[in-house]
Amino acid sequence: MRALQVRARWIAAAVAAAAAAVAICVGSASAAYIHPFMKSFSGSETPAGSMFPYGVAVDNSKSASEGDVYVADYFHGVIDKFSAAGAYISQISGTPSGKFGSFTTIAQPAVDSAGDVFIGAGEAVYEFGPEGKYISTIALPAESGTVFAVAVSAAGELYIAAGGEHVYVYDPATSTLSTFATSTPSGKLEGVLGVAVDDDAASPAYGDVYIPELGAKAIAVFSAEGRYLSQIASTPKGALDSVYRVVVDPANGDLYAAAEEVIYEFGPEGSFISEIAPTTHSSLSVAVDAKSEELYSSAPEEGVVEIFGPAVIVPNVSTSALSAVHPTEATLNGEVEPAGGGEVTACEFEYGTSTSYGAKAPCEPATPYTANQAVSAKISGLSGDTIYDYRLLAKNANGTNYSANASFETTGPPTVEGQNASEIEQATATVEA
Image 1: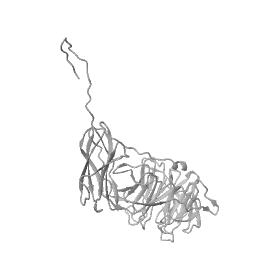
Image 2: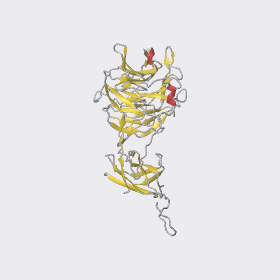
Image 3: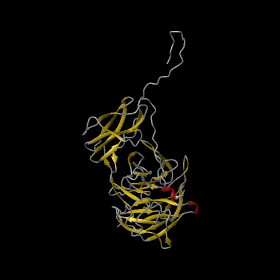
């Protein structure tokens, strides 16, 4: 697997349309949590003046570097260090034996409880102290291939994803490297660019290891001993997109998974919590600050790292069956729930002949809502025999939430087909249609 492939647009959105004459692909309720976008930083203060952020990690230790952010810059072959707010601090460009080198696959780094940074480059993992001083090298087997990601457990074991199909574990107490996993019950690991471990001692999944598979569009879950446990392959909205990198919040065991145009959030036992949509529509890696609960998403194509705030409650929204569909008009229905997030201040349906929508209709009754509210909107000016997509959105002081996409098909005028006349006489004939 070539590292340069990350420059392409990996995932194409797929939208299914209903084919019934009266409506019906109803969107289910979406989660009532979002992580609001805060800001982004581009590395303009670095020596290169820009970056291609192939991976990102946060120092969650109690060291002097606590809260600092490490960004793997693929184009320039370095690790750039930033403050939590995105201000450039310093750079790690190599070991005493030489530089990492431009276009070297600098993997998603990891930081241990002492603040030491582990950087995968080529077929090795390098350890540096919080101040950027080189400490040691962990060499991988020749057949391992390029290192794509590193994760570190609370006990200090390193989990290393390499070559797209290998995950190794390194025990610093014995300085031994062994194979952790190469397959699941459904077959050989394929397209592995990430690895994460739950190091929250209070989590019910403490010690579990998460391995995303591009080919399977799933996240395989293993015990700390390497025993396959389960698979995360969907959310209430449907199947996962291809997942690239994963990280576990050491404060609560929540799992975050970067999948290009969305970041999935799951609870420690795989329960779906929310989706975060990067404003750049690109995400290859994700990291979390356990103290502030802020998220960092690397967008390599755009050359930025985006920062999202802690989760906040937004209204729960869902669509329901249409009450009327005609050639040029329809009545859309749904439900809005404040869900404990406070007064709902705005509500509308978006609709159009694609998931770009393009048209809006306000909800009836009008906002504000302080309790669960059934809503509707009568829309007109539609085209007959046409499939329309729509969704419901509602807003409170924390932000806006959207329902899953739903669709309906308008009816058309009756079709008349003539047939040959029969029983033709001088003054009469039988005509059928």
